[in-house]
Structure formats: C-alpha cells, structure tokens
Amino acid sequence: MRARKSRVRTAVTWTAVAAGSAGLVAGSLYVVRMPDGSGDQKRAALTGEQAAQARDGAAGALAARLAGRLGARTAGAYLDSAGRPVVTVTNAGDAAMVREAGAVPKMTRRSPAALNRVTATLRTSMADVPGTGWAVDPATSRVTVWTDDSVTGTRLAAVRRTARQMGAAVRMVHIDGRLRPLAFGGDAIFGGGSRCSLGFNVTRGGQPFFLTAGHCGNSVRNWSADQRGAQFLGRTVASSFPGDDFALVRTAQPGPSAVNLYNGRARAITRAGDAVVGQRVVRTGSTTGLATGRVTATNATVNYPEGTVSGLIQTTVCAEPGDSGGPLFSGNTALGLTSGGSGNCRTGGVTFFQPVTEPLRAFGAQIS
Image 1 (tube, rainbow, N blue to C red):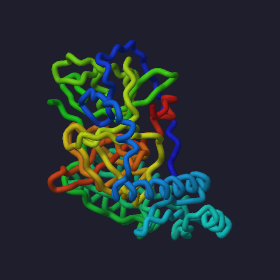
Image 2 (cartoon, rainbow, N blue to C red):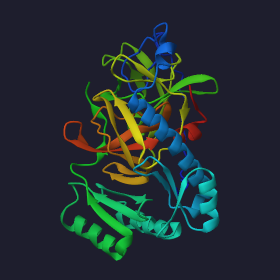
Image 3 (spheres, rainbow, N blue to C red):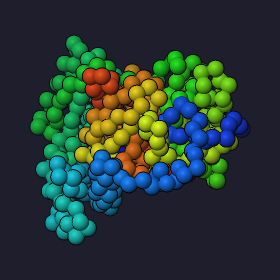
C-alpha cells in the first residue's frame, strides 16, 4: 500500500577508480579478501537462527508477493506469532486466492482506502514536525503514530489533537530518544570527515557499484576504506535524501555478493526482496557489528530534522551513528539499507531502513 513517488531523480556520473583487489564486503569498512574455499563456507549447514530466518524469508516473500498482487485491495501483510504469512483482504474472492496460494487471509477491519486517507491527513498536518512518523499496522488495521523525546509542548499537543480527530483508526506511541540519521563525522567507508557503512555490492550494465545511505551520499563524493583516504573505493554517482535514503557508488573492483557477519565469516546474498511485518532480520554496520530483531512496520514515514523519508522498514534492531547505509537482510535475501532511528545497542532502540528494492529499480541495478 505504498504511494508512488513522483519526484524526478537526477544523477551525475563521475569516473571512478577503486584501489585494491580484495573486493568490498557489505556492511564493512574493510576491503576483505575472500579466501579459497569461501564458497564452502557460504554453503555451510544453516544454524538454528539461520534456518528460522530462511523460513521467515520464504513466508515473507509469499506474503509480499500476494500483497503486491492485491494492490489497493489489501492493507498489507505480516507474519503471525507462528511464522505464518498473513495477508489482509477485503472480499471472499481474494481470501480464497490467498488461501489457495498457501497464506492465511484476514479480513481487514478498516478499508485500505480509509487507512490511506488517515496517512494522507498525517502527511499534510505533521510533515513539518521532526521526531514524528507513522505506519499502517496490517494486523490491527490501524495507523501507528509515534513521537520521540524532541516532540514536546505545543507540538506534542498538536500531534495528539490530530490523532484524536481520527479516533480509533490511530494509535499513538512514544519512542525514547531522538530520531535521526545514523551517520556522523569521525572514524567502514570514509569521506569528507564522515563514516558510514557499505550496504550491498551491486552491478549495473555489467559495471560494479555499491549501495549506501542517501544522507551519506549527499555529503560525500569520494569514498575510501580508511580515514586517511589512502585506500580509495569509489565515487558517489547518485544520491536521494530526503524523500528516499539511498545512494549509488561506482567502483572499479567488483565486490563479493556477501555481508560481513563480524565473526570472521561472511553471509552470501543471492537475491533482493521485500520485508514483511513479523519477519526476523539481521543488520550489520561499522559501529556495532551484527544485531538482530524483527520487522514491526513497512511503508513507514519518518520526519527527521533534515526532512521526511517515506516507505521505510521499521524494526526492533538496534543501530548507532556510523551504521548508516549498512545492510539489513534475512537469510540470503537483501532487504534494506540502514537509515536512522533512536536509542543504541546498549539499551535498545528503534531503527528504520530504506527498502533495497527501490534503489535497485531506480538505478537499474542487481545484487552482484
């Protein structure tokens, strides 16, 4: 139930030469050498957690595919507590189709059109209030509206007034801390005094690139694997933020289709897919390494101080500054790029991710 974005994207292409022959591992600040036999490592037997992620991935892919087929006739899809794919429907015919496809149909309590009217009202009245956001909860057919610690006084009163006007269709929650993009100047991939994390290695027209966050790409043209800039990686050729949060970086050296697990191993990434509420997911990044959690919303809107980003994946996975741009995945499926959130990996928090399928479509790229 995602609105099509009408904004026109433009990109300037620069010639890029990347140093080193090792290749880039997603989510890592290092140029990692893949040793002989790495293919055997990637094909190692799944652990219990990996097997659970694989099951979630298959169920989530089915739910997302069916929701996409229904389009405006669904309020979304999710995985229930048993890991079953559930798709919301508005009529008996669609329910039969969903059931026949192997998923669980659920009649939505509010029509997709009614939920769209709620989010449209929120977009009009709250887009200029940083620290707020919203997403449709397909399990309850309600819109969850959140505020962070920065929303106080008259602004908080205005948000609550707007929510009350829409009655039971809206549920308000508070997020501890402050929502912000997770890049910062300092010590993954370095450039312009900033540090971010590499997302996924991709190809476009047979040429090597990688994806990272748009709020990183907006401010950095030349990227390196070290803070001094001695190990040049590539140049930003396109970036979109706010609105979206993704960037494309051109490299000369193809990187492996894998993510760094920060335990001396790498996970092969073989495809890209869409996240589903309830799905178990993993994130890696240059500040905090590996973290796990679940998807709590899709098509979420966040009003950062720098501007509004829509269509995001909301999760319980923690992240911290410097993790921006790093990969979100489940099993061998690429799902998203770390955008922003609140909290940290000591006390927990909420993190939002740019779905990876959107930049792949926008750039005509594929997971390498």
